[in-house]
Structures are given as C-alpha cells and as structure tokens.
Image 1 (cartoon, rainbow, N blue to C red):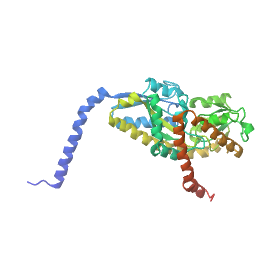
Image 2: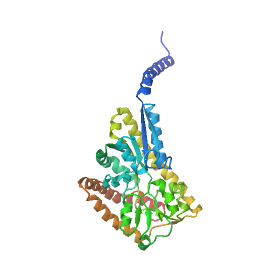
Image 3: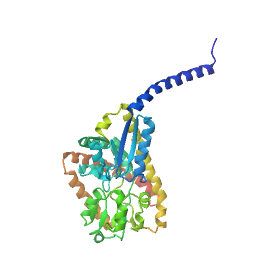
Length: 364
C-alpha cells in the first residue's frame, strides 16, 4: 500500500526528530561533568553603559550557544582585580578572559596603542576594516603571544568627545598646568603642551572631578558621560575629540584556556565576538544620538576646540607617533601597517562618509 505524501513527511520528520534527540541525551551527562566555568574580569564598573553591557552581551551570547558546555561569569572592575590589572589576571590564571581596551596595559608594550586608537586616526569602521582584512588582527595576536593571550575585537564607541572641563580651554595657555584625566596617546600629546595628564580607572573619574583632584576629563560620549554624572561638576563639554576617533574594545582569552576548548566552542567565541562588535558600535551610536539633546537640558555648554589647539595637538601627534614607532622593530612594523591603511582611508573618505556628510549637512 502506497503511503501518502503527507505520511512520508511526518515519517521523515519523526526520524529526524528522533535522530536529533538521541545524541542530546547522552551529552547532557557529559556536559554536567565537563562544563567549563570561566571568569571574565573587566576594566569597567559592572554594567556600565556600552562598555560593561558589551561584556555582558558577549558572555550571554556564548552561554546560550554553548548550551551548558561553557559558562562565563562577568565581574566588574574591582570585584576581583582592579581595572588596569585585568590582563595580569588573565596571564596569572586568576581569570580566563577579560574585557577592556588594549591601551590600559601599555606598560607591557607601547605598541598596544595601535590596537586601541591613535589621535587623528581611523574611525571605527576603518579600524574594523584594517583589523579584519588589513592584517591588523594578525599583528595584534602576534603581539599578545608575549602575554600568553589571544585577543578578539568586540567593537568601538565611535568618535569620542573631547572631554569635560571646569573652565574654558580655548588657547594653548589655558592648557598649561591643567590636570586632565585621559588615556592613551592623547595624554602623551597633551603633556607636550604643558598638561598634567592623569590616567584614572573609569569608575574614579567622577569622584576625582568632584574633589578637584582633576580639572577635566576625557571619557567617551554623551551617553556614558551623562550616566557617570560628569556634567554635575564640569560644565564645558568639548566635541568632537581628536584623540580617539574609533577606540577598540577587546575580549581576550588566556592562551591555556583557549587551547583547552574544543573547536566548536572556539567557533562560538569567534562568532560571539564578531556579533558583539557590530552590536556594540550600534549601541553607542544609538544611545549617543539619543542622549545628545539632553546635554542642553542639563545646562552643559558644548564647545569646539580652537584651531590653535587643534594644530598644536596635530603637530604633537606626529612627534609622539614617530617616537612610539621607534621603540623597536616590531612596533615599527605595526606602525607602518596601521599608518599605511590610515593614509588609504584618508584618500578615500572625501569620496565616501566625509563627502556624503558634507552633502547631507548642506556644506557642499
């Protein structure tokens, strides 16, 4: 007797369902016995907008896809180790992974600046292009071999603001002696102009402004800066910044932990990192656009840096970058790769985003 077409479909579905269910039952026991429990330490206060939530988003994604075989628990700065000791914790095995930005550990290698952001450098989309297709990630991983760690790019905040100031800074004289919180090469550039650059963990920026320990601070952009309450003490907000046009966030795994993973779990981490990178940039763009009008409601005075200051920091950047590139042969190699793509991006941008934005805003 010939079966109907619908009967055949039901039969095939039943067989497929049974086949799919069969291998799941046995591994459930194995998963309970062999499941990996990983600790992620971060450079951010737990759940901080954009940065802390990026870490949580990544961990949640991996936990769901790994289905119990790998579970990541996220800890904020200070819960296990201080913000700037996250890479140390991974190297020492205190944590299997971290979420932060490479320039927080430049004491280990000044070349790490190239894997976060450089003044007047690449935007987030350009930076992602260099990392993904321009050889950047290979150089980054080669550098991290010295730290027994494997880095992954997990997004950017986009163009950052220039910072908060308790008084206007319109001339070079206004900068001299200024106590200003800033991370990365921007601090080295400002120090050449007489600024007292101070590196503080993100969670200490607001209290330092409130106490008067610093007179200004760079953080990220409207969304994060409002959330951190920086407007409560410093009313002058300079936008945009020149020092971090597309700073990178990293998720880094200790090499021993990475090599302990089966290939499918490595694939899950790779896919989750790529997805987190896209979502993180979208997250920052959406919330910064949404938060921007609130600045006026909070009594913030938005300003732009003067041409005098911009030209001075541009010239200082060239000097600082050449000094950095001269550190050693491998740093020079990274520098040359980074700068070569940056020059290509500069040539292209007037015919792409920069040109379009000028048209959109009626400047052409």
